[in-house]
Image 1 (cartoon, rainbow, N blue to C red):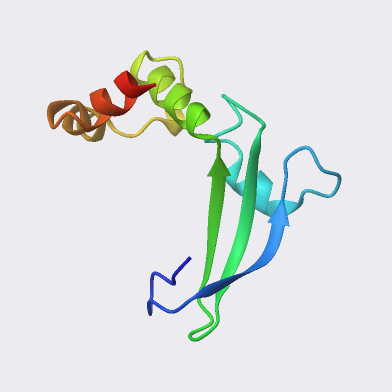
Image 2: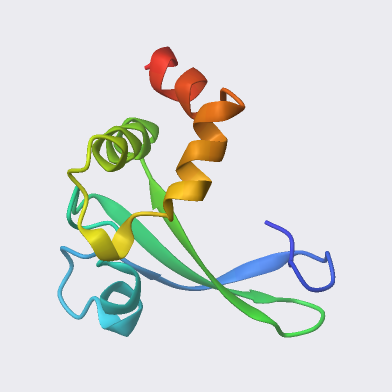
Length: 104
């Protein structure tokens, strides 16, 4: 994965799973938008090898992402994790969301 700041490569500094003992603050910080749907995700903290910028990535199974999108569109997601209506409407209008949901 490349750094969003400088474009150079990043390396994984930590990997956390929500079901592992001592899962760390990374899971607590990133979990609420995801764990309403699934506990099967991985949080990685990455660091740029060049500029030392730090980012978090969350890895999900594609089917879970599609399920989360379907749930959000159907109003099943908690209010604090749903993108604003304009974002969802824009994805529906340009066909992006419909195409993703129809494929699965």
